[in-house]
Figure 1 (spheres, rainbow, N blue to C red):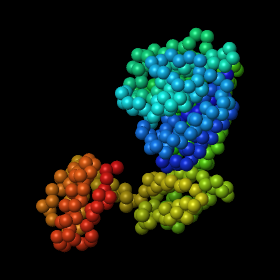
Figure 2 (figure 1 turned 45 degrees about the vertical axis):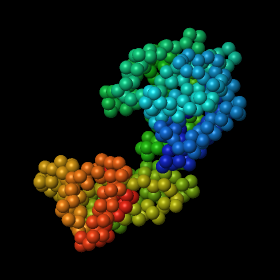
Figure 3 (figure 1 turned 90 degrees about the horizontal axis):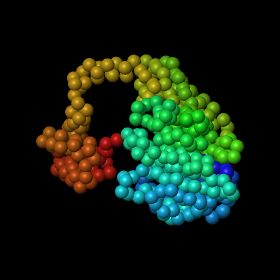
Figure 4 (figure 1 turned 90 degrees about the vertical axis):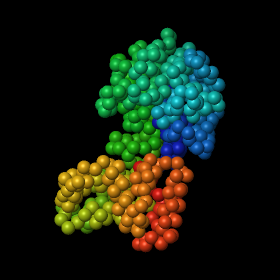
Length: 423
């Protein structure tokens, strides 16, 4: 049986919303034409509670896949604590982006209730074609702290007489060695013929318990990391031969360019940025996504604000989506400021005290009296308190300004929209 593994579609992803929808549709359509069944290891949607138009797009994608009838496999069995409402073999689990509290339905379960997919989270779905059976056990995305205990509790077992797939959606320590809480290869249940994971957005082919572990990567660009420069698509696995192929489904090119400037001046940095962008576009008219890293030492007499990076980017914005990271640019003055800050009394203040001090100074600059309770105002702003409190604070400040407290400029917080929000 041919199984298409399509993962991390992230329908509704805001930065590249059209890309996400188009590429999800393209991947599912191609998988439907080539495979007997489709399995999806999580993050079909980008948010836990997608807006109606995004849910509608997901419904459209999976409704069309089920109607075309190209998937020749059929769901012939289900071992779990819920009902299923279709025999179309599109089998999925919720990812971390769709995870909700235990007592709430997630958006993927809604697609299952509508009969568009089979939600196989903490359950086994058995797909049949001819005399062959494929059993897919799924574990939806969980918090890293819970997943190991949950696996021990569930103790998944393969189905006798079937080709068994264990499908999950987690970080794996051997691939992302950042936390001891991450799932390790040895934590995975034994006895399965194939392991399939989502969550990781670049393609990975490795092994677990001596069997293949495949990660197809996302169908849409999301993190703008260098590993995402590869093509997007899905994996087609043949259970009869044990072989698999990667099927590209078309996506915008993603190019990373790194610029190292020595004794950087506005002219040299501008020229280097232009050269890098022209190289990334290579004359193609395909509106690529470009991540530009700019680093190096700024020449004496200049600061980072003198660098024309964003002016250059604006000139190319109609030909590409460009994101810039200039945090690597340094100057002697900047380093001196950092050292002065570290050695000054400011360094002894807490973040809150420093924030209150800056707010107090700014209020004085625009003419507000010192009898305003700065601590209370800072608390409202920094904790993103209720809308009414923010409105009241804005009205109070606006009224104060209107009473003629010698403001040097118009009231800085004249409406709810203008009040700065905590990142």
